[in-house]
Length: 105
Image: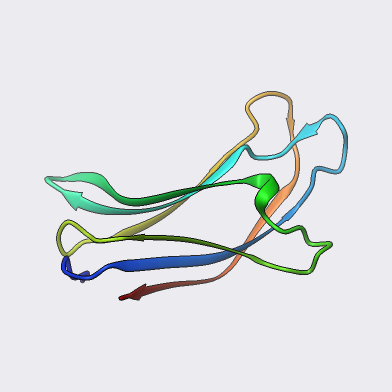
């Protein structure tokens, strides 16, 4: 159970491959979110948006840390990673995620 008097930080590493063909489009954004359940509904307690182009490529060999912090409203805490796909055209590109952690501060 989460403790509402503590701040929590979720961190996950991401890496991307660009689309292989000119007619492919990559995901538009990645959101990392912390939520609590209040009266049966999810309530956002922390959110951070990232753009696909801001994530390191596999060619670089580096992983980009994505993180979000927040305080739960009660003893519940849920982590959500949302990838918004390309809205028009053929989807392309790849996202990889690794080494996730949740710590209390």
